[in-house]
Image (cartoon, rainbow, N blue to C red; front, top):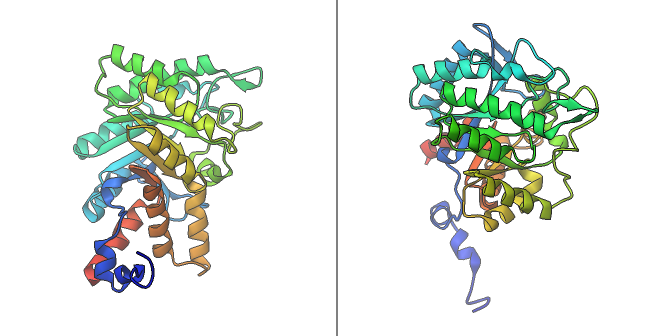
Length: 330
C-alpha cells in the first residue's frame, strides 16, 4: 500500500501513540556513570572543561554515589584514579593501597550493591602520560601488558566487579584473562575497549585525568579514525581472547562502527559517550544554542539505536533526572 491509503503520520498524531510505537528507549539500566577519584578528604574539585564533573575524594565519592542511586536508580559506575605520585611505568597503580583499589574497597563496604567497573590503563599513572612503558620513544606493547595484568589483579582483589582495559595493547585481553583465572578471579568479566580510536574528542578527559601525553600522540596504539574493517578485526581478536563485553569509543562519530559491531557479535556491545561529546553539548547549552535536555536524549537514543547495549556517559545522571521530571508532568 502507498499514499493515500498508507499515511505514516497516523502513528505520530499524539504523544500516547508515539510512545506506544517507540522503537528505542534509553533507561537508567543502560547507563554507566564515570567518576574520577583522588586521594585526601573532603575534596570536590571541578573539571574546568567538563562542567558538572568533579574529582572526588573517597569520602565524598561515597556520598555522591549514594545520592545518585537514591535520585536516579543508576547503580553502575566506571572509576578512574587521580594519584598523588606517578612513575615511568604506571606501577603506582599496581599497589593495593593505590587510590582506585582503596576507593573500591570503601565503596563496596559502604554500598555493597554498587557495581564498580575499574578502568585498566596506565595513562593516569605515568609521568609521560602515555598508556604504557616507553622504549625507544614509543609504548612497548609486551612490557605494558605485564603491568596491566598486575594492575588487574590488584583491582580484582579490591573487589572490582568488571575490569575495563582501555590501553589498546595487542594481546592484553588474553593476558588479563589468564592472570585473573590463575589468580582465582574466574568470575570477573572483562569489558574491553576493543575499538578505541585516536580521537580529538578525548581532550577534556585528559584534563580531568591529568593524562595528556608529554610528547607525541597515541596513534601507534589507538586506532586510525578512518578505519572500519580494522575495527572488526579488533573485536574478533578480543572475543577470541576472552572479552565478555566489547566497547566502541568514542560513540557519536562512530555510530556506524557501533552498528557494525552489534551486527558482528552476539556478546554485549558498549559505547562510550566521551568527554568531548559531553563538553560540546554543555558549552552550546550554556550559550543557549541548544536545548540540553532534548539534545542529550537524542544523542543517547541514537547510540542505543545504533546497537549499543550499554552506554557510558557523563550525562547519565542528568538524563535520568530529566526523564523523571517529564514522567511526573504526564
